Structures are given as structure tokens and as C-alpha cells.
Length: 390
Image (tube, rainbow, N blue to C red; front, side, top):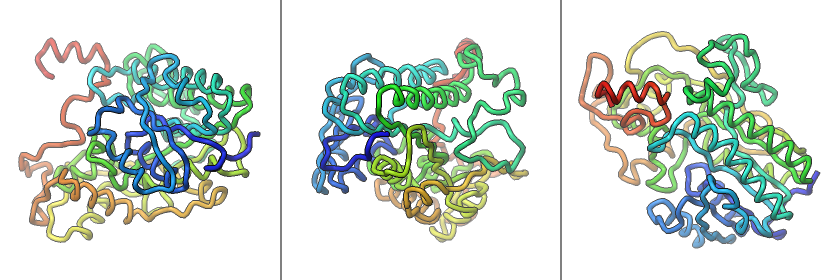
């Protein structure tokens, strides 16, 4: 097992550094005094990257920006040279224009394989912290099943329907299967490569991540922090059971894991609700926002009905092994909402009952799901285009 890293050992690299989680990782590292090489799609796109450069005014660490296309072999070769740690937060989520389920799969596993090639070439990496997903943890189970770090998404395959079976044929048509498969396979790949390469790889599996936005660019479609914004504007979504974790706790756990001598290669950390206060149906989340923003029309469930209580998992290992002191669900919700308001990204509606749901159409539009999800079944999309439904 390699030794834990520290700021005085050398620089570290963060992929997906301009994203919601990646930006918080960079900020956390800078506050600890690290020299950070931030890997982004386009370092010249100041709309997405200016907040990273501004972190140099915080210190004591420093950050430099590097344009890296994760879909290209060798993209990280120069950036990783001399680094002692890599925090891999970049991923193809499926929410970008032109995405498909297969691109989601390839943007996970194949992109990670190329990243590992660059890591081996560097020869200096001691710790790799891989941002996986709770999608790699949750498997078919009864309602209320308690998931742990030992849970993997390929368990109980007999309970999967043919349309959600773990096969490459299904991957080509099903984004959810593609995402879960690529995350779990990528986890196993980096652990195996770490064994061969003499470094330590650790997995981070976050569920519903919310918290303060560090840039206006973090209000992105199909991101949980943006769904909070929809609720602030009075837009209601279908019923959902939330398992809330603060983005700052996700970032803090990554750095604590890289600096810890208590873990070993292949260890995973579920980043989930601290306790039952964060395991809540959407109506309870609505009530929290209503208490925080009195007299505002806060969206909730579009239609009343029974709530299926899943996924259930509680934050334990980052606390007991790494000493994480997590934020409360109220802090995560408030700071998420306040940052959206501070950036001017949402506009509230006065009147407690002034929110859109079934039977009360106010013409509010969603910013979380503003259009058809990009990574849908290509055959379904082709039919919809032919029928003029996109």
C-alpha cells in the first residue's frame, strides 16, 4: 500500500475540475495548501472556469488550468507527470447534447482506461480517488433495503427485467444500465490496475448531491442542485425519495481518503445521508424549503400518491474511518438554495400555495429537465423525430 499524500509531497490533479463536485474538490485542496492541476474541457471558457482561477486568491495552495479531452488517448500524460495524487471526477453523464447510452458507457470505462494509461506513464502517483456513483452500489432489492459499501449494482441479477439486464445489448438502449455498469466496471478496473501499478485506488459513491454552487455554470440540467432550484421557482416533479449528501462532504471525504493511512486499495465510501433527516420523500424536502423561505410558493410532488422508500443508505465509513464531520441536511438545502438565489439563477413566487402541480398549471418551466434527455434509446429518439415529437 502506498503512503497517504500531503501538500508537501508534490502536485495533484483533478479531472472534471470545473464541475459541481470537481470544483469543491479543488477548493478543498487549495485550502489545505496543495498545488492543483485542474483538468477541464476548455481552459479558455471563462464562463465555466473563472471560479477556479479565482481560488488562487484564497490560498494557501495554488491552481493552474489545463485543457484535457478525456475521450482522447494521452490527454492527461503531461498533466499527471510529477503528480502524487489524482482525483478523477470527470464523467459522461448523458446530459450533454448528442449523448447516447453508449457514449455514457464509453465515457466511463474507456475514458478511465485511458486515464490509467496516463497514470502509469507518470510513475509518480501514490493515490487515485475515483468518483464513482451510488448507481454502482444500488441493486434490485425489496423496498427499504439497507445498502452498504459491500453492495454492488450487479447483485440480484435475477430480479432484473430483460430491458434492464446487464448486457451490452441493453447498454446500447438504456442509459441507467449503461451508467451503473460503467461506474462499477471502472471501479473494479482502477482497483486491479492499482494492484499492478503499486498505487492505491479508492472509490467514492455519492447519491443525491446538493449544496452551494461555486459557479453559475453549476446550474445544469438533470443535476440535483438544479432540481432544488425548480422547487424554489414553484415547479413540481414526480414523486421521489431523496438520499441527500452535501457536496462539501463529498469533496472532503475524497481528500481525507487520499491523506489517510487507515485505508487500503479498493476501499469504497458511500456518500449518502448522515441519518434519517436526509432520507426523505420530496414532500418533506418541500416542507424544509417552506420553513426556510416563508411565504414563497415552493414546488413539491406534481401528483399525490404513495412514496417508494429507496434507496436507503446511511453515512458511516467516512465518519468512523476518516473523521468526516458532515453538514446537516438543512445546511445542504439552505446553502444550495441561497447560492441559486445569490447567482440570480432562480426567481421565487410569493404565496405559499402558489406552486405548480396537477390541477394547478401556472406555466412554470423546468430548468432541471428543460428538454428531452439527450442519452435516450437512439431507436426511440429516431421514432420521436420521425413523428415530430422532439
